[in-house]
Amino acid sequence: MLPFLRPALAQLNTYTPHPGGSSAEQLLDRLDTNENPYDLPADLKQKLAWAYQQEIEANRYPDGSLANLKTAIAAYVNQSAGVDFVTAADLSVGNGSDELIRSLLIATCVGENGSILVAQPTFSMYGILAQTLGIPVVTVQRSSSFELDLAAAQQVIQQATQQTGNPPVRVVFMVHPNSPTANALTAAELEWLRTLPEQILVVIDEAYFEFSRATVLAELQQRPNWVILRTFSKAFRLAAHRVGYAVAHPELAAVLEKVRLPYNLPATTQTAALVALAYRTQLLAVIPTLLAERDQLFQALSQIAELRVYPSDANFLFVLPTSTTAANLFERLKSAGTLVRHTSGGLRISVGTPEENQRTVERLQQILSSQSI
Ligand SMILES: *Cc1c(COP(=O)(O)O)cnc(C)c1O
Image (cartoon, rainbow, N blue to C red):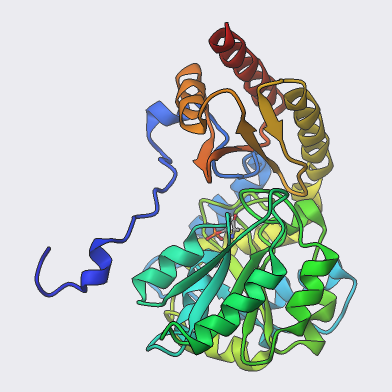
């Protein structure tokens, strides 16, 4: 390793991004990253193309204040939660919510100011980004139904402060509903999060909100130590454009604004997010269909004896094979033409188009019946 590098980075596993864009992968059913399977409709792409030709000055910096986008996001957040208290001052917008995760870590933990707590299995970016910044990651395991062991979490928070020499737990990351396991926070988990002291930031990642309709937004006003993360990468069909946002106490939102790069969102991305919000009724209209597809996929996979399928509040299913390894099943599915995510000893399968879902079922049936003979 080059001698000027931080030794901790040698051990770090790189996040394996989706192999997007390669033509070989495009021939597969790409059910590994939980995107909406439907591209932006042609008329909206036309609007983006028009904006690029007529409005965007490629030689000028984009709007670094993100003012228009924040106003539009605030209106959507309020409308979708039936509240009216969210304003632009409560928002920070990131180059994907991944950027906001990093900004939150910089704002709270960097410089031995804190550790983070995650409940495994969960979204891997929290731990990866923390490690790149030299921030200790404290983990607790989830139960067999993927609920957080509250007593263990409480104990770990106390131990981390008193015994390990790590800085105290400053941030608890929870996904609602969780990835890869697809379960929403339970009433007991939420109750525990409410008991956490004001020195601990609670991050509720609602990346799948448009599918689950589960949100803690209504509580945010009473809880200055809670922040919600959302993204345009899933239901809103804009993964290619990279937009996420945080809804937070205005003091935290202001610090996130200090931490972010001044021109973090390209002009084309800002336009795409504004268009998606303006036409959200049209874009989100496919969600009931995707949820019905998910339920059908759940039923079909539940019929396969060699699979354990978990209930889902999102647009993906988590399955554990019982007669072979997840690694083997992953490889065989890929050879058959379906790419899923191999993680946490299981497979996370995104809900795709009806044709893709049908193929998922057929391929799993075929692979599992042939190997059990
Ligand atoms: C997909 C996803 C995100 C979104 O990340 P972006 O950087 O906005 O694309 C964030 N959190 C979780 C849990 C996710 O599954």
